[in-house]
Amino acid sequence: MRIERSFFNPIRVVSGASGDVIKGGASGQRLEAMLVGSDSATSYLRKYARANKRSTVLGLLGVGAYAFGFFHSDHYRHTSAGDAIAVVAGAVLVTASIPSGFAAQRHLSRAIWWYNESLPR
Image 1 (cartoon, rainbow, N blue to C red):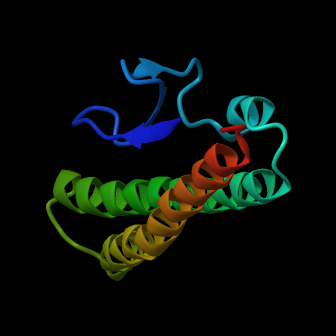
Image 2 (image 1 turned 180 degrees about the horizontal axis):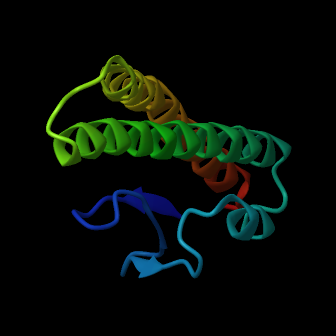
């Protein structure tokens, strides 16, 4: 099992030499059922799920705040202090989501490594 990246799907979990895509992609619950047998893999997979959720929530909130501030000020042809705060807060939230996204990728990679390590040779 390994991770492959592509343009439209930044994280794809694949298996075997041919790279068969694992059903469900990188969603934590579906992968957890496949990574049975290694406590370390399960632990890292749970860390992945938490970090991925944190990154997604922060990113979506940031994009929403940024879009609200940007389009609200453009619609009314003026920028209020609230609009400026929304744009800045959106940018801060999106930026804050980046470390969690990197941590999620690192945890997923380690979960797969531990799973592969537990396979019989």
